Length: 272
Length: 269
Image (tube, rainbow over all chains, first blue to last red; front, side):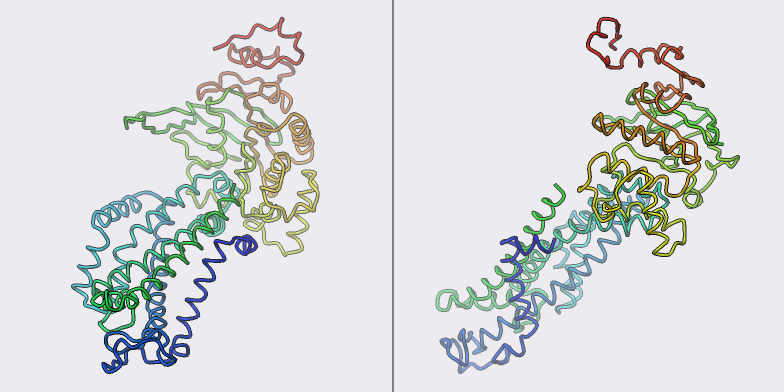
């Protein structure tokens, strides 16, 4: 599979974009020249220079430093959310699909109730009661999204558990635990990886969208969505303040999507 | 000895309008399978043969009835207790390719039952798998191949190796040669005959071809609509069958030579 990924142009483009963004996020303190939250009204709307490679914003903050630190916020909120969603959905989706019965029926009812409300409404209500903050927005997104992920994982496992090789494994004496771990999981994992790698771009867009609306992220933090929101009042005089974070969000989402979709093509080719 | 007492399997089904009804796949079947003896079970598609096979290896739970193996009523046991006794009854499923995990190599597929039921060292396991490959007449170079890299005949042999790995008391072969081309089919049938002589177990060959059933065993059950309509204990040739349905199955066989067409009166239903 790794060879196929290396040979696939789309996957490599996606991976390269993601690698660059990850390097920015990991080494942000070393790559950023200035403090991203340091306000200096004297330096507002400065042209790009050696000290401020992309100029400054309406409060005199270094746009380049803010963009680089923004990668940290986008990825470091989205990735824990994704891992939490993966943990919950893989365990619940697999167990309910495999065993069925009353627990599966109860979970279905819970899923239907949660899915009746758009995630935005759930997040708005939760942030309203929990308060602003990165942890609160992450918790709210997980609570609003887990049912969607559980449903998808459940459908993958349901499809797999009725295949003949699972029945054959049971005849050979495999326990339920072994069947799930050694047979069902390895065969559903490629689909799950593809689903999560495309799903993370949705989460990044969601967090940026909430930050743009002023939900979740504290004011002044260099989150890309919040930067878009700050820049919108200067749309005509300084459009670059919207373009830069907009391009960053677009590239990150595109990177995950390109990689995820290429992965799907590679896996479906392998299965075919 | 395997004794099946008045076994039933009923499925609840829904039609496209959501109306519920029941389907009796196996309808009060009783028989006894003696030790180290081979049997054939023949019937057309939908007659309940495969369901009966799944009941015998406890993949499906019977709605009613009992199955005794060496005097022990296994129908009363829990799922976990059944699992511990699985080394006694194995099954080779109809579609060899889909009954092997696509992520497992040949070695992993064959060694899995051994890993579960026997505590073997790496060398012992390797030795056992190689022995099994020899028994099913497959080259040892195939051990690292995946199912999609093997032919239909090779896949069938791997399924057989997996089933015989634990020396079970009962081996059920569900449509052992269906979907194989004629040359491979002949080789697999011959392999089954050789294995039957080598390994002491009770064999139940399930097929829809009465000629294959007769080739594999002289003890032939004929099944129709979930019921065994004839049991022929010493079926030497087609003339031994007395039931109308058995005769219909014989008449439905394709002619060996085109000229035979004139002598056959096939009832088409």
